[in-house]
Image (tube, rainbow, N blue to C red):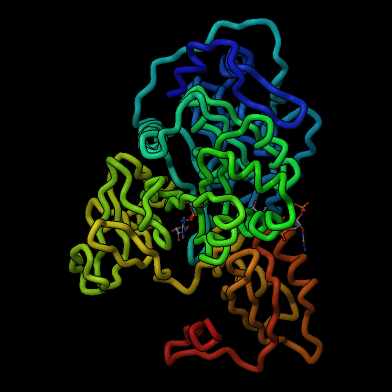
Amino acid sequence: MLPYVSEPDGRPALTFGERALSYEELSGAASRLAARLPRDGRVAVWATPTLETCVAVTAALLAGVPVVPLNPRSGDQELRHVIDDSAPELLLHAPGERTPEALGALPRLEVDAAPGPGTPPFTREMDDEATALVVYTSGTTGPPKGVLLSRRAVAATLDSLARTWAWTGEDVLVHALPLFHVHGLVLGVLGPLRLGADLIHLGRFDTKELTRALTARATMVFGVPTMYHRLALAVEDDPALAEGLSRARLLVSGSAALPLPDHERLTSATGQRVVERYGMTETLMNTSVRPGDPSGHGTVGVALDGVELRLVDDDGAELGLGTEEIGEVQVRGPNLFSGYLNRPVATAEAMDGTWFRTGDMAVRDAEGRVRLVGRRSTDLVKSGGYKIGAGEIENTLLDHPGVAEAAVTGEPDPDLGERVVAWIVATGPVPPTLEELAELVSSRLAPHKRPRRLHVVDALPRNDMGKVLKRKLGV
Ligand code: MLC
Ligand code: AMP
């Protein structure tokens, strides 16, 4: 799975600020930890943007123990749900990290990422179908579901991206993505580690630090559209950033749509065309624009090799190429998840036979380039590249004594792509404020799920069955 960790040399592997590990040092630290992990069950990782998170995940992969990455910003209710659902044996975290009480009596182990004396690489025979990661993702209703990602799926997606992007061990990737979702963790950490490449993680997104990394040695950038939007705004007045970006070999955007004005600003300031790729936690990566494809603009490119992709209309009929008709994207291939943890019904519902239903709506041109045009559900919001389910926020809002009814929608936001909007009917004459509701959602779920706008209304538009008609709320 990670050949350069199993047979390491002294090349650089990971840099976080002033701290760095070579492949030999990473292999030593991860092997020492792997030997201490339980043979059965799962381990949770307090996924701060640190070397320790990378060492912990690497150790678990060496030992064949499934990893549940935890968002360190998760609120109590979300954390409790993830822990109850995934039942980890152990929590791995960086030294000195304060972990919340919601984690209860879960045994904890500090990760030692110090580049200590050489330890022989830990080895164990592993089945490709074994689970590597359990990544929690929001759905339209209810709490987040744990997506089971096998070693096979992770390896398949990384290898096809490497072929498409000519991504090699010579590349140096820089990014500032969180390490508890597939973009930052699978593509952004396991990608370089599988290829023997080098990762510079910025800890948090910062244009000055990005410029420094690009000027020093980075060749590739990964980011969500919000980050590229901020770069597009900054680059016009920042010649060093423009120079750094123009020298990069590849700029890749994903997790949400990068608007054309941002594409154009970046191209005019740097001469670069940002490459978009399209994926999902359950499917890992499905498509990518081929670097240099002059017609790729405005699309998410073509299916990656090994991935089968089709568009299906509302009657279940498969659409031909180049029809300009809109259909749901369905995919299959070795990149697919193995199911949702503890949720056989949800797993079955997500599939159409052997095809995974993405819920994304698209058209395809005659060459197979996919242009995403929307989502099937009005109950999902993509904000800052995070997928946010309306249902769990609505349930949280309803717990506030001042809220009688609640609906959550997304609306366009120039920075975040979409922002979360709460519509409530108040129980009394003085409705709760946006700040109060934002605080409630931040502390129970996570700050990125907090509503950014509030509408207090007399009644929510509903159909005869009592279901809220979100399209009448301006969606
Ligand atoms: C504000 N904050 C609050 C708060 N109000 N905290 C608690 N309670 C409140 N009421 C804090 C926030 O925590 C944060 O703190 C700060 O205010 C600003 O937060 P923000 O406005 O939400 O966003 P920002 O920090 O500006 O982040 C933007 C971003 C981030 C782009 C950096 O959204 C991001 O990292 N997105 C990446 C998402 C991602 O990786 N998605 C991939 C999913 S996988 P502080 O301290 O942080 O400033 C996938 C598949 C695929 O989609 O295809 O890739
Ligand atoms: P997640 O469930 O968080 O993994 O998010 C997956 C969803 O992100 C997909 O179903 C798409 O809706 C969206 N997405 C990912 N990449 C892109 C992209 N390049 N353009 C538009 N949407 C994207």
